[in-house]
Image (cartoon, rainbow over all chains, first blue to last red):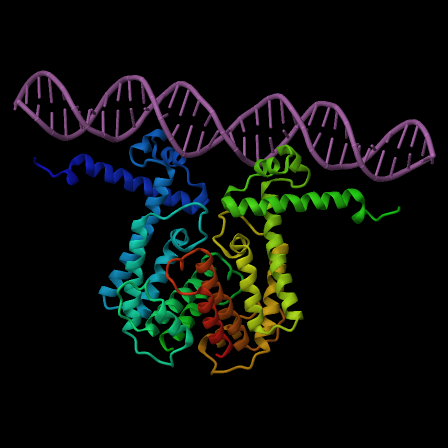
Length: 215
Length: 215
DNA sequence: TGTACATCAGTGAACGCGCGTTCACTGATGTAC
DNA sequence: TGTACATCAGTGAACGCGCGTTCACTGATGTAC
């Protein structure tokens, strides 16, 4: 027993090839879109035969699931790191924006048009709530300005989703507006709906963020 | 010359069949998603052979283009009608929301994840600016509250997109926040990102709209 | 009103294509004594 | 250190499938005199 099962040469090799497969999958997605993802095309690009990929992924759906997982994991890590480096809610917003601009297709795979019939695996919802918690912490750390609204009290009655988090309902509300407003700007920007309009989307993002931080 | 060329029986029949094709196309889209749209499947559903559809659409891309056009046209008409019936910006927001909830796939076809390589035809951008104009009118009709921001003056320098509209930059700003914020809530709601969270998305939408109307 | 002709909707066969996936196999890599 | 065996990555052939699209055709509908 020189090496453990999880670190044997073969396991390491497997992990490398798996990573190379998903790397090519991301490239192909950026070129042809999420729906055009093809195992055979990826194999060809890697100089392998098509069936070879079945050593690494049980099916095409399995590969897509892995991509979704990678996308969630990457965003959660990005926010964790920013938070650990002392970023406040504004810092997290910029980390989110940078992450989205780095690879728009990755962003859309998580927050874009849903694929009918595709059901996200359980562990991605766990990562999703990691992301929520990080953002909620940052929201709760901000001083509360303005009076409580009727939506605040509605949230007080429906706060199960903020699993165990003790943030006041004002922070929950701020988290939701943070999420929806920044997603609104980002997704329209990434989808190209501002191209040709002339103004700088980064400044719209900044303006929305300003209002979020001071409300 | 009993009937004009645009109203001959044959032309009328053509228009009917075209409409039936797009009707089935929308159904298929709701079931299997935009990328799974298939001419052969539509033909089968209509009890026709596949090649028959080529009398009505030159190609699959041509059909998709028609769907995009229909979606834009439908939204523009919806907002026009609401506006003509005396709706203010808040009324337009509810018309938009109702329109989106009626057929989420239609909404996503216009504002969702872009299909790489697909270029919208010129006339849809014309309809798109009809939509903008209607919303801008409603924004300009609202009293301006709050001081001008630096983003307002940035917009003053880049207002070409508001083609010929004489709205003050504050109205342009309000239009952009209207668009991005409501799209943020709507798209996340329609994509199912709020399911299981417990709160009522309609109330979040209303809360955001309240803030838009009073800022 | 009736006949001759043109238009055009729809069919069925056929094309090439790339897809996901299976299967039996070869050959290299790692393991056990 | 060397041999015998097990594991497993990758291949090539093959499967059935549905796709978009073309083509030559039939038959019904509309038009012109």
